[in-house]
Length: 122
Image 1 (cartoon, rainbow, N blue to C red):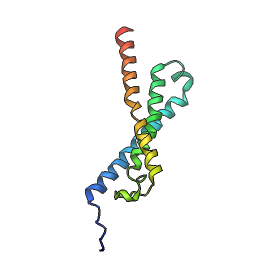
Image 2: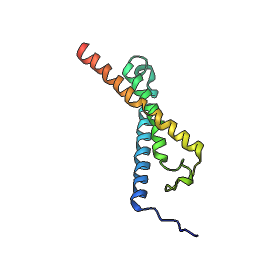
Image 3: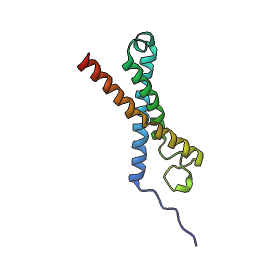
Image 4: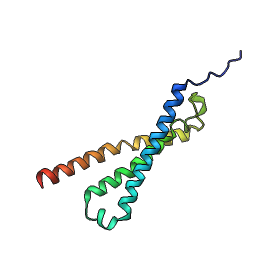
């Protein structure tokens, strides 16, 4: 029995390209924050704890954003997903970085608590 390969619906292709675009934009933006913090680290990192939290959050966000930007590329072709061209190791690596990104909300919460302490409790 021969079966033909079904074309991918345009909505799947659009969703992948949107994820690639937004992930790339996020990685670029977080990289800019890292650059700004690191370029003036004497003042920004040594004297201001909120900037160290922001730097840590941005570093993790770069890795997570790249994992999102790659979208389906690290997946094995056997998954049948558009642009899948990886293997189980690239898939697991992508999963690791997506899970690592769960630290970003924790850093964000830390930043909120820091600002609460500074603004409300001086």
